[in-house]
Image 1: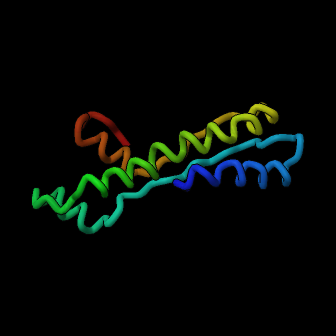
Image 2 (image 1 turned 90 degrees about the vertical axis):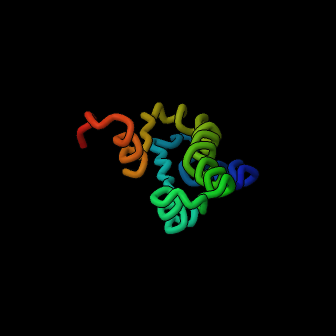
Image 3 (image 1 turned 45 degrees about the vertical axis):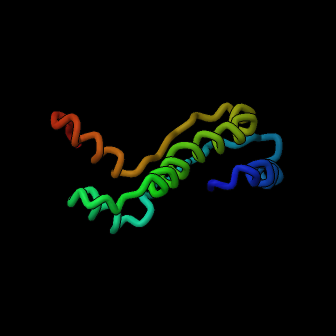
Length: 105
């Protein structure tokens, strides 16, 4: 959900459903590598098909959007004294293993 202008509307919609009980759990499950075939090919061959725009879009979806969506939901989460969980894709973990071969999965 990268349309930051929609966050208030989404939070209000959820608040209308949960009321003053608040939100017990928020799962941000985002994981995208735009044009995955071209990106994988570019990374394997060094051909340069991976573009800065592709990486900006991935960063927006995978990092920026979950951060600010969570921030928008904080009042509802605090109402319910909820625990915060982060669900991530295995792609992130596999990337880490490239730099630290001692990581076990």
